[in-house]
Image (cartoon, rainbow, N blue to C red; front, top):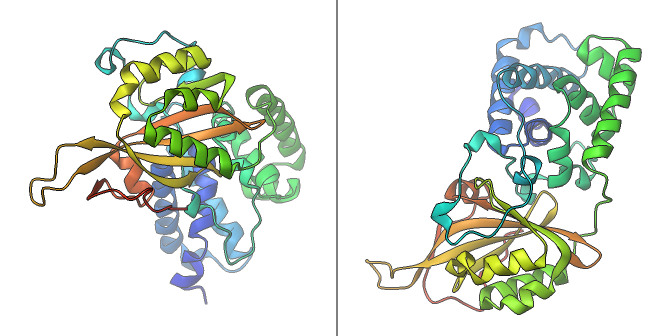
Length: 326
């Protein structure tokens, strides 16, 4: 007999499935919760005609398709406009609604499930997640099931109540579109580059930071629309409005299988203890290629820290580095 523990054991992989579909951690959580609600509501209809896993994926897929019908696809700033010029200050920047943007997922949500499901970590990279958003909903589902979860065309067809030929056609079109939007090969995780970035950023040594960048590196800060490309523009930002980051403290973390750093900005001393305080500002996610930083995406706002299980403020005299959270 199926019980709570049986269904709950699929939460992790269903969360990742829904995250790839939506490109948003919060929406993925909502979708998984709705999946479980529907599963319990219709549990008596589940007569072991298929595996519990396949039945839950069918429900989750319908939830995703239902939720997506009235929403725009999510993106990063470089998907919407060309690179811009460095402004004089932060208040001059325009902001788009939260629903516009891809959001990150913490690496601790990407651990393998006890069921032994193997998922390639590069399929949660920001570039891959963003590229998925370019696909029509059913093509997106087919590609995730077939190329990420290794389902056969026959299994996909059964879940979507369609033909194998239709699945293969949708998969071919999806792969073609994906190659256009995400042509790059994923790079290996670079621990030393992350260490160097953290040290340079906490010291706010702009020369050292620039030396870590690829010549055509990109820099973006959702929910701000503006983004920059190239070392000159990024250096100008760090020496201009970016000066607000001077004196920041960090927690090393991981997002989307990529190096990441949670950055806390200095504020006034804590009124109760009199100690220094740093408040949550942004999680920096790094794209790495050929030993250099190819892109830095700042995901801004305390809600990101909450989703990562990170504190929203740090108080006290800082050690050399705050603990790692990977």
